[in-house]
Length: 420
Length: 81
Image (tube, rainbow over all chains, first blue to last red; front, top):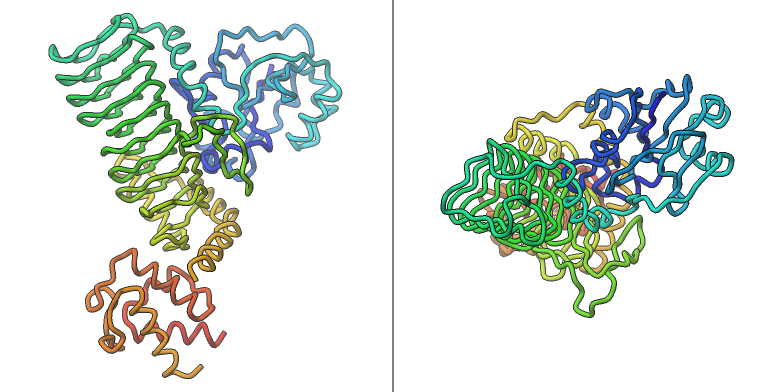
């Protein structure tokens, strides 16, 4: 059997955090959506299907075939790359059928004959044809549709995955002067992790998982449910409130609540980040803060695909694209979207939407130093963490620069008109 | 637009962005060393020149311009187009 894990046209609703990544690379809980999917799959050859401009990059990143039509040769298990595995799942593969959640395919088993009959080279057409032609069944599985869905499900995922992995207790270096509040059964400190004196791990309301190579410096508090990824450092005095997932090699200080930091990002200093998703290689300057609750307690709306979208949520923070940097004292409004490779400097009331690659200086959108300069800076930032910018990654960044050029110009023009 | 007018308008923009009196701005002045431009202000200068002259400059080439005289020449090239 072949297994096709795909992203469809709805990747656009997960921008800006999906601009440089396939949707299944996004993180929630302990790891990426893809890692969760892989963990429930039966035997079979996995093939990934991504938007065209990510094809070469995904080939370099993963040991799977990408956008190859090999799956036509066999029965196929199709799996939506936005399916969040947030419970124990047993796939029903007895007969040809697709399983839906709110009208979208979650997964399905297709006979070779059906695949060959309905496949026309376009994943979006294929999915629509399947829904109309193949036996289907509704489910309540979780499909990620918008960036705030990842944040919303994070606490639940951490609890579920902590129990699933079932590693408990303190293996690493744990100072006599640090303490666990709650049960040690709800804490895991990996062998190479280090917890310094005067750290409080509060697992009374949810588990805390501290992965390999993590350092938690003095006077920090980590409240569960929380997951601290490999080699991440929690800076002195940090308040890591409930519901946080930090991917590998982040540096986190200040106060953070119900947020996901993808990986390699820094929020070294004080300042509050809540209900947010922060991409890769993001640097948040000292005191960078976001609002995640409106003063009138109404639903937060977010500017998505050119129009305001009601999230249906009371608490929504910021969604910050890869390689973006903020200056000291940047205060983001509730429900702010910041594109990739932006440079934001503080101003009184910031806009709620920043197109990718813009610089926001003295209250105005500016085009910055251009894509070459941004790439040069990205390479330096990555080398500092022993990573290199792949040439396919550079191609993807240049592509996104082109794709976002029109909206950037509109915002720059509008900003000039307002300032006159 | 003649050269004198361009120079006057360039100096006006520099004065507004960097807070330097126009009569103290000389053509040979360097933006960073003589006029005290910070890196972010060089971006503001590019944006302000674009607004003032209704042109769109290549950001990377624009940022290679180091003196007032070079900025005048650079803008003149765009105005010719």
